[in-house]
View 1 (cartoon, helix red, strand yellow):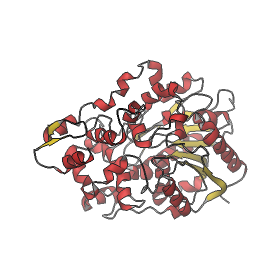
View 2 (tube, helix red, strand yellow; view 1 turned 30 degrees about the vertical axis):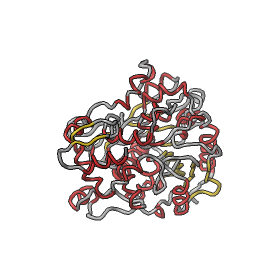
View 3 (tube, one colour; view 1 turned 180 degrees about the horizontal axis):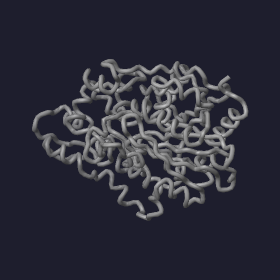
View 4 (tube, one colour; view 1 turned 90 degrees about the vertical axis):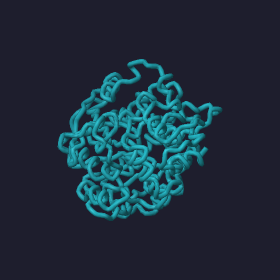
Length: 433
């Protein structure tokens, strides 16, 4: 099967190729059209209960759970309009004045909904609010809540999707954090990031020296910098090596959507019909990050699948594939000097040094993580210069996976309770000293 997909991608002439991912015969032009249609692998969303209450946007979901909610917007230097959802105080803890600020950033193909979707009392957004924090939930460009731009239409302007997590690090995080500090009047805050929320944060230090000085403590949940040992099917994209840019331009790039040919092929390699979790695997989130059946509350699945995946660009996913090939932590190579100059201000791709990440850190990692493999995490940790003593946490449950940091049955016990303890320590004592 893998060989057939490989042959398709390397075929730039109008020939018939058999067995592409779904065991059918198509010529190349037909395949390009098919890649734009809804995939049979992804009919999972049609089987999910279509109850409107399961599909509430983040702010309405927060209010439905009995908490106050606000929506604020930050505009990046390059024109993307990013939504942020705020929980200004708790349901039980209603004190407003003097609440320390925390900013929380989601991971790959995710959104602010991740932090509240499992509901009280275990959702991190609510735990933080009840612990006395002013909670801000960010959204990277291109997802459900940040599919907006000052002048580009994401439905018709292909250039809207010409971004990677380089732009998340250079523009999205600074714009959101500065907005939070402006609205709250706070001088500093704590940061929590998961997956690409950690990637962007670490890379941000290459572009911005001011924000790190405004962060008391950054919590890296499943940190992703080096990805050589990644077990996610993203590894399959890396097998195309230097040809990957040509392949993407042939098939069309833009929004990383679950109806794409790329997703069909990834699902083919990762999923099998006989698997009890085949439907979950067909969902792009579980497909890319893995599934831990023992820690999944199955009653929450319909609600989770209404909010994930939340969208990103294809280039953002490909950047991780490039890093598998190079075994580095660096910017996206757009494949030619002109595009690199446009995106990076130089024909050279930026190299990100973890030694620049001087912010005080707490790190939380799992042993069965598809995206943040233990070998890669330990390599990352060895190069981070400022992990606070006692704040390097390996999750005790051996099967704990990438998405368990968001939705596991015992996520409060394994992740959020120690996180809150670390936050308290650095509120009471300056961890930057």
